Length: 120
Image (cartoon, rainbow, N blue to C red; front, side):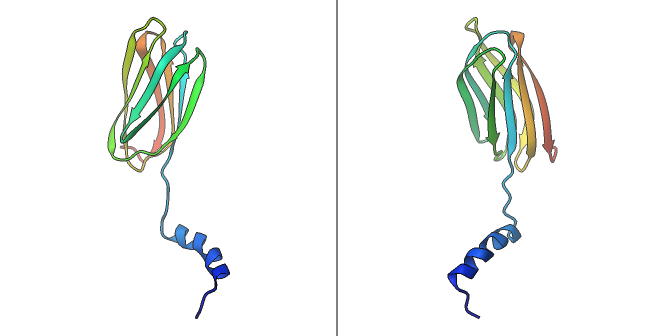
């Protein structure tokens, strides 16, 4: 049986789905509730990072991440008083997906709200 180009184009999406192609992603939100603007926000997770140069008080930044490997999530930023805050978050593992909320609080603290499956 000979397949034409048009037939192949229609079959390709089904073939990819059947092959098990799945992109595990975590919708991540960081909210600044420190009471002041922060600078140089960096969120490190296994194999990559994201951040923002400036985050005003009450402002939120979103990122869709993909975890490769496993390890502890880390957050770092410079507070309004010039001090650097470094906070360890939850353990993350490859193939996790879902949502992760990070709420930055005063005095260099943070509240982590993971809704991830499967659990590490």
